[in-house]
Length: 173
Image (cartoon, rainbow, N blue to C red; front, side):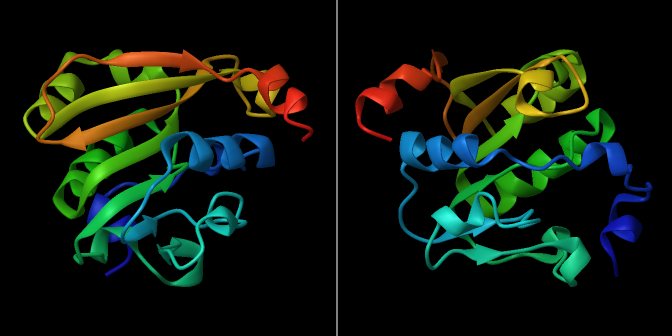
């Protein structure tokens, strides 16, 4: 069964946006995933290339994330941006992973009470790392974009940080 059949909705090409290399590199460095890792939206390998030994899914390559059932320690990815789809995406992520990091517009996540309640039953948001407005990242929107770290079974406070390009420049990168 394909992802389209599992979700019962068509994928919107506008929901697929390539992750800038600097964002992918920072996401992996900042959250430092360890153990068994899954990249469920491999796409053009932007994030995956920074995750040596990670498992992967990519619907366009015949590996449907919604058919993945093996437990992993971490999921880190840039999932489809569709607001309607993200609730299903996050729910399945909580079924297979303890830690979940998704590059996503936080406003989309926080814009629906039902989505918040659905997420809160499984765990909560531990950290939000902001990267800037979507248009500055080459995304087809002006909404803020952030890496959002969810933890299954976590119900504590959420923290946040901003990516600071100068931090990397001073390290010689």
